[in-house]
Image 1 (spheres, one colour):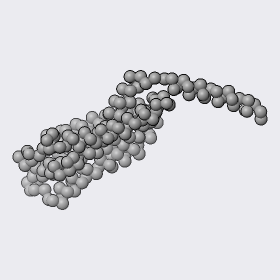
Image 2 (cartoon, helix red, strand yellow):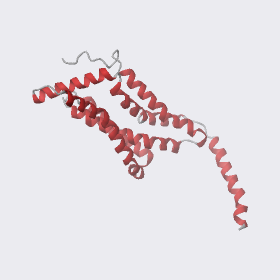
Image 3 (cartoon, helix red, strand yellow):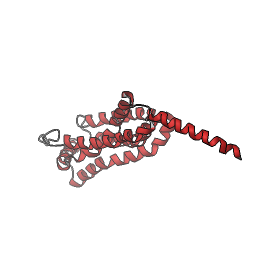
Image 4 (cartoon, rainbow, N blue to C red):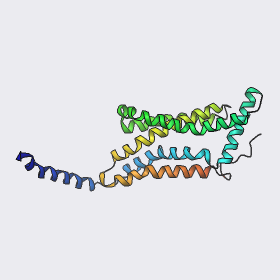
Length: 212
């Protein structure tokens, strides 16, 4: 019974020494860049797509509904009904959250197979697919591509928001873990801000060509 008590001071001393060693580790450029670009490819994308369809809400909504109406006219030869347009717009906005739920639920299985870093790298594939669908949807005259693209980017965001904090905590020394962990929240806010700014009519939110 006395042996564990004798070993206890030695174990405490080892823990103190390991804590001192971790505190002595400097913040390297490799660590900073890994944290920043990891958050840029994950948290920033989430924040941007969270706000971009509502920035500014009226102009963005008019533009997308006009695109839906043009596509509907070309397909069926009749204008899109007001209720159907509202339904399509609502699905386009809300399906992002459904994709996020699916990504958050499935991330545990992916993490067990690929680990934190592998999951984030795989997650870039979802982002690329979503970018292609969202950027080519108007050219292809397919509003379904916009909806599917929003769903896939939602999956990407759900996976990223679960995997990124674990990855940052894994690669960061204990004494700066809180500071590096803030990259997640900071890049989310920056993504929301970017989506709001780029949606201004003076920049990329113009709807002057609607109806042409």
